[in-house]
Length: 289
Image (cartoon, one colour):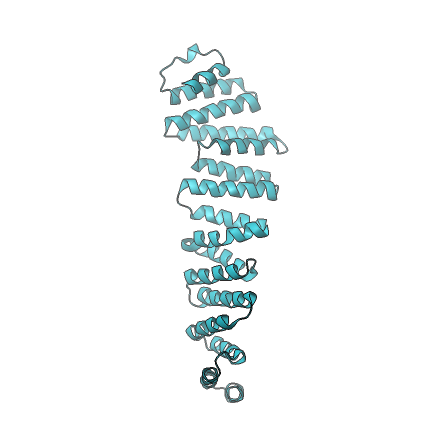
């Protein structure tokens, strides 16, 4: 150790100091002080492969989960910052969280990977969400759920993520307008999901002026119904639009138009709208067909 200090500090020969310390570690396996000195030298000399081996050995000798987690996070940082290998970094950060569930450095680093690397966004988000739920870090959870939604290619999965996002915004953060927006986006992926429609209306009613938000939802339902390819989905959407107009907007004209559209799309125009007396009759006729 003394020889290594002289070589590094007095003579300015860090590579010779590394050789000296490596010999010391070989002679005394598990020498923590020598390993830490080597770590510092490997960093200063940008010897990243050797640095990773060094940190891996220190982790194997660590006596606490906290220290092991710190070392795994340090290995992740080398992969992320020095080796441009976010996939390998992600695995080290995941291992750090397995050891210390609320490891702040690993959490922040995974969020950065999710933001900067779309190819690894879904994996990073999945590694984070369980931890963020358990620790009630709601703002971070909103951020990660938004990122996760952008990475999902399947509409059903994206709708589920957006519904979870809405739940956090509504229940945990009381951001009702943002929750309503998340639910509307979920409807774009799952236009026939009755539960989501009901949640949109429920959130709208809890806002300061539900008469402003209910028309927005009516517009959303109509746009989704007009664009729906499946007749049964279009029918259900027009029926829901009619219910919304009747129950919440007190708009009899829009109510009847919606039900007639439901008949046209859902029943293929096989019945004459003129036979219908009132919206309630349309409900009964359509739902029993």
